[in-house]
Length: 119
Image (cartoon, rainbow, N blue to C red; front, side, top):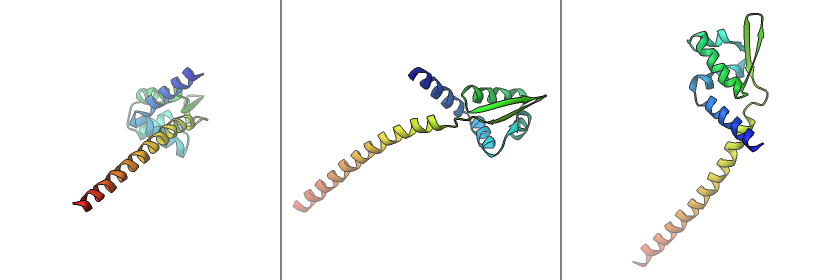
């Protein structure tokens, strides 16, 4: 289970590492779109956009459906909930570390102020 979760996060973050794919997600957040529409919007070839959509689909971030000759894309069901939870865990850790650093800095400032007063 942990390996599957890690693999999913790896795939998601790899997919999100590309600006075009992040743009596709933003676009699909507004409304569904065909691969052709997305290719035109991002000024790329149909083959190039298919590759981007495939990466997003493999990561579970996008779902596609083919009706006739048109492949329509929409956001995946899970969204970025797992990724956001992972980021939040690390954000909390960093917040705790920064809070501890703030305390050390404040203590050093107080010591310095006391030493200046003694001179």
